[in-house]
Image 1 (cartoon, rainbow, N blue to C red):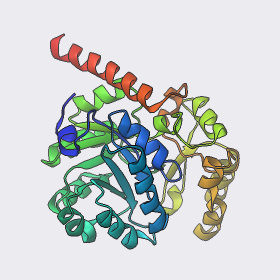
Image 2 (cartoon, rainbow, N blue to C red):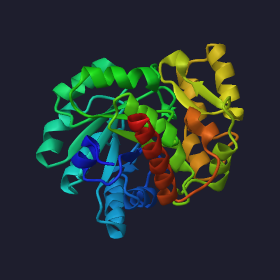
Image 3 (tube, rainbow, N blue to C red):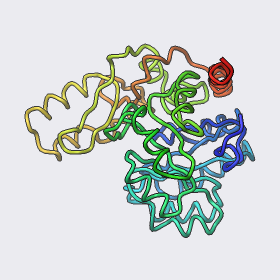
Amino acid sequence: MKTEITELLQIEKPIIQGGMAWVAEHNLAAAVSAAGGLGIIGAANAPADWVRTEIRKVREITDLPIGVNVMLLSPYADEVAQVLVEEKVPVITTGAGNPGKYMEMWKSSGSKVIPVVASVALARMMERGGADAVIAEGTESGGHIGAATTMTLVPQVVDAVSIPVIAAGGIGDGRGMAAAFMLGAKAVQLGTRFVVAKESICHASYKERIIKAKDIDSAVTGRSHGHPIRQLRNQMTKEYLKKEQEGVPFEELELMTVGALRNAVIDGDVKNGTVMAGQIAGLVKKEQTCQEIIDEIMKEATALLQGAQYG
């Protein structure tokens, strides 16, 4: 399936892996790229040396294209941005801010820059700033979220910009991919489905929590202070939401989540840790290899899209 995104990024299949903190490291990124998609290393709040090491570890496994996701709010963002130039990373995705101050440096080094956007206004700004494509991410996604749903955001962004749009948020199978393409997307980004991949370093308890999740198990904390985060319900979300309703100050709420994502992903504390996952978690039913995940999604999406074309 060739699209503007597969051509732009020199990948075989229009599927991109999300840059999830603690999850998106070299093992997962290499496996996704080897399966024909685009694997992403999530820089998150990690220092530049860690990011450089992860890039080099991926290159020991595969010479296929990979990307790095830069969280622009990270205190290490400036140093990470420079590492990506030095390591000649072919694709850079960004989140939590405007990558404008790095755009010229990244583009001149040959990188394709693809910001994550949650609104039409931001998508237009990114296009004016020189972005090669944008990832329109709906509120169904795991982690930090915007307000618009994928179903409403993607077609509006597609209509507003001339660069290719990648759809993200609530996409977990071929049906979701086909729907995104019908809305005008040229590729999809998946996070939650890849969290339970066999190559994912996520603790078995974290994977099991996603696999056993129901449609009503998604919770959003942080709405009261403007930093909403989607995760699966547990003891921590129950206590956090109760304190939010009581008007507890932001600083006290933040203390509840320090190290909580790592505790869930690495140590398997799914009761008191932060189990980030999208609303699609209820659709994820088994652990598979990245190759199996991508092949299954591509087969289903291709059949649906061909049926729409010739039916």
